[in-house]
Image (cartoon, rainbow, N blue to C red; front, side, top):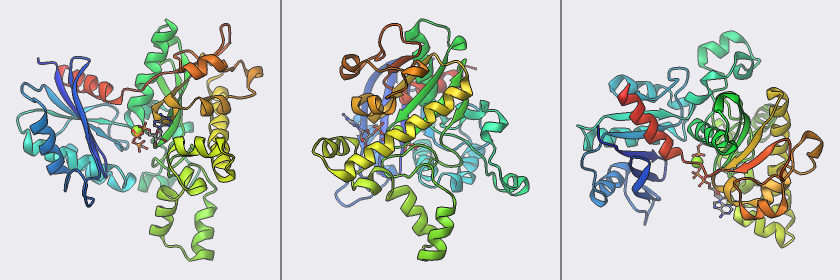
Length: 370
Ligand SMILES: Nc1ncnc2c1ncn2[C@@H]1O[C@H](COP(=O)(O)OP(=O)(O)O)[C@@H](O)[C@H]1O
Ligand SMILES: CC(=O)OP(=O)(O)O
Ligand SMILES: [Mg+2]
């Protein structure tokens, strides 16, 4: 079989793609601001047509698609057929920001590359190993079951890849390693991985729960919604927009990019400083919780845009945890890793670049070979 796989991460406003030859990236690109005036493409079809004309896609073994919400239906990658398309569509209400865009990419790729197998790789699949006590919300069981209300967790391909890389860098078998992975990108999530399996993660029913993100609130008291509805008269759509788009770093300091927050904090801006502190504090709380869940912790690994590039966040999130065996070495942290803890520390702290697209390519190949 050919080793060439095209990976598509189709988002609401962008289409990111990478063409793999084995583990090598032969070509890649981003079609941005889809559908916006002056954007790179009018819609996903035009975006993908552009990709097809800019890269040599002959002899493709597969197209691998990132799909964010796989619900309870999918615990691994699947070859896309009409039934799979239907299932992803059915799951859209559980990930309204992501699944419809993922599906648009799948539809267009099936149209334009009808002879190439399409494989869906789900963000949620890695977390299907979570035990019931981690996945269950303490609400009326009948309501939860009827409406699929439970924790699913996301960023699974990243947590899977990064936890495996962590074991490799430690020179140990993944089956023997306990690690907390911190995926800090636009969306952000923490995951407790025991022996290669997700046992807890901070995102929930949707990618809104858990850590503070670029534009999303992460955890808050659910009564906030009821309060704002009753007292401020906010509608469901207004609340959705508030928590998904006008919260997180942007809500606190007016900018969703961590680089701007770090600059503002260095210049003494009070809002940027508070946003930074709230962001880091939330990470600290999850690290403590997942240390307790895992019992024995070998490593903490930072990844994604913020995790890979922001030493200030790594230092702040793990400050004052020496009694737990967690320390960050200032020089190593500034140098960017991979290891940023001092020699001899009980817990190894690492920075590992994520490779969601490579992981998707490998999973696509694996499902076709099985
Ligand atoms: N060099 C950098 N320094 C600090 N933050 C960065 C840097 N590069 C990217 N980021 C942050 O990472 C975020 C994007 O992360 P990324 O993992 O690329 O997100 P996604 O894949 O979800 O779009 C940006 O919003 C920005 O805040
Ligand atoms: C699930 C999720 O939050 O994805 P992203 O970080 O790509 O927005
Ligand atoms: Mg991301």
